[in-house]
Image (cartoon, rainbow, N blue to C red; front, side, top):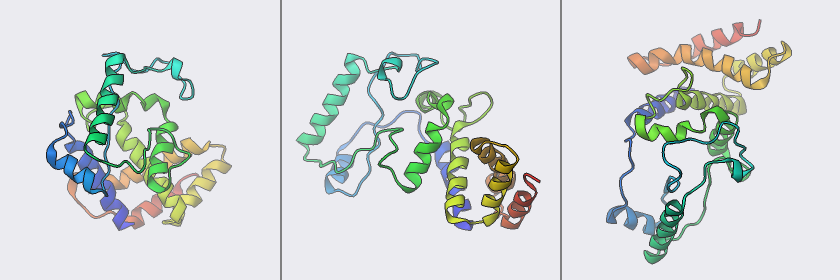
Length: 216
């Protein structure tokens, strides 16, 4: 549990420190990729500027989404040519929100993102305002999704067991699963706040106590 608290605090610090624009590939980066054992994160090519996905878009219907313009398609082709010319072998490709072949923490992140379609444009506009500042209706989607991932990991490990017990009580009281996770997340953030703001140790017993009261 202490490890997860440290990872959570580190993730938030990383989000706050992310640059608003990604650096261009340089020779050192290309050499590292060719050597193997690396992960390359690629943002999609150019779409219609200044707009997000339509309000009622569907993940399984590309015609309803914001698609690449021709310049964006050419950007993708250029990247492919660059990788081939440099002899960089791509062993595995993961595309956002395609969850059937993801495992572990990757799948938890993808599942959480898919459960919140209202946040999908956040991953685009954060490039301009920064992840730490971006909000959707008063909620920071990055912190929200991170809370989902932490709680799902706690449920999977049954650590602490009070998380699963609180979830079961809330579900018996008629709360749907996603809202129940939100209730648990609120308790998590109450305990995480001093960790993030003041650098204090995560109080696991306080977290467990709050969870034991939840849904009663």
